[in-house]
Image (cartoon, rainbow, N blue to C red):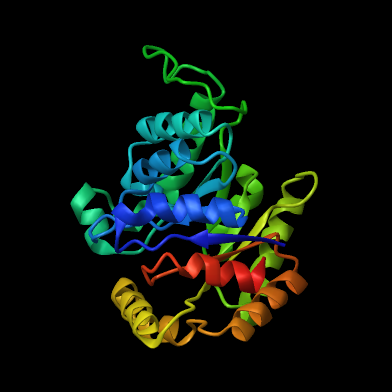
Length: 282
């Protein structure tokens, strides 16, 4: 089981320190959330900065809201980040669910799933070196692999999870162990039904904080603010893990379900959490 860290979004200036310390401590991956109409750093720009100051640790979006973006430009950005990081970048994708994000980009929230599939087809063609159209040439640079960066897909509905097999990507599960197992099974079934060899990479997520009560309060308030739009903010905050035993137990549950990696998402901004987490789980 690999253990990664989901970076806090409230203090972007501190994230280079988080990246250096996480790599030194032995964490596997740095993950970053995506929103548009919110006070968070843009994930591709931020992960590019972090790629430049690290050497080993992987970088992934969890998840990038692709329908808000132009597919040709996104293909170029993702390929560039994949290339300059030496293949350490994984492009986690989802459709999002906030009306305001789509209003700000002039995109239709009701067609976001279909738009993502159209984007994926375009990006895969561009990553393979094909021209954009009969009148428009290829868009480089070439990524480290012919089919582009590793793809991960987040979602809860069968149609969303079926992208794992259709597009040959892994699965990001933002769900507690108590009901993540069914989602894992859907992802694996999609993989098999689409004739993929091997198995999809399964990445689980846990919201966690270790430290004094003010830090716990800060993390809980940040979760409530981030998920306010969803109607499930209280539920998400209630699931915040705050003790070593809770964290170890939940990671073991995901390991028993066959997850390949668990991301500990940090909403508190104290970077000393990195050392506390490392002592508990590494």
